[in-house]
Image (cartoon, rainbow, N blue to C red):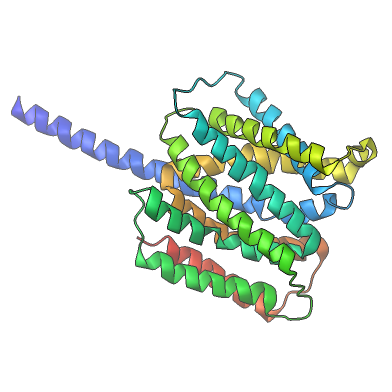
Amino acid sequence: IEKNNLQNFLYNLARNIYMKREHQVTGHIAAIVTCLIWGTTFVSTKVLLQDFGPVDLLFSRFLLGYFTLWLMRPKKLRTEKGQEIIFVGAGLCGVCLYYLFENIALIYTQASNVSVIVSTAPLFVTIMAHFFLKEEKLQKYFFFGFVCAIAGIVLLSFGGGENVSVNLIGDLLCVAGSFVWGAYSILIKKISGFGYNVIQTTRRVFFYGLMFMIPILIGSGAKFHSSAYTKPLNLANLLYLGIGACAVCFVTWNYAVKMLGAIKTSAYIYAIPVITIVMSVIILHEKVTPFMLGGTALTVLGLVISEKK
């Protein structure tokens, strides 16, 4: 009997280790896919802001994302007492404020500038996780990787010196966006501990984000022009942002946070400026420079170092 118990113990231990490692691998894959898509959204948003205002564009894409999540899983989410306030905070920070700051910043400054500054979000995530999530431990490799990645990002976007347009208003909005994304990451980590389906929790977060947008829509006097929605290019970009970047990517990102933790997942944000530059070369036919190559190498190296245990 003792021998059988030992065999069962060793089997269950090996199985748990394997399952945990498998979940971590899928978490990394989810984070990579998310950042690959999010890295292209700056270009799409910049195109759409020619015909849309920042608030009505934000509301349109997340409303589309909300209904997409309903189609994916129409079952209603029932929460326990005291949990709803966490969803409210996540909707305010991660949906309403972060993307509002980002959209407005894209009006004042270049997309490359925005992608660089919002990549400082892991710093805020790390600081907040250190104080609010006791299981999130700060590792020396994270700080080494952070310095390396930021150096690469600065070289990537500002090394050329020719087309850099640093606007104080846009830059400050980006910093504010990074801060609220840090708060959103902590709230999502808490939500993941509730044990609910990730599609349902993401949809609930979208709902509160949209509710916070309505007063801003009314106050800003935003107008929805049907002609803007009927243009094929606008429609394609809006579907891409609403279904891909919102509905799908928020689910995969929240899943990654659940599997890897807020700090590890946030490190992948370093890769977004690299993807943005690559897409601008492919789509906008911008010239590849040594600064771009060096910055890409440093940023990827920083990501690898940050992920090292």
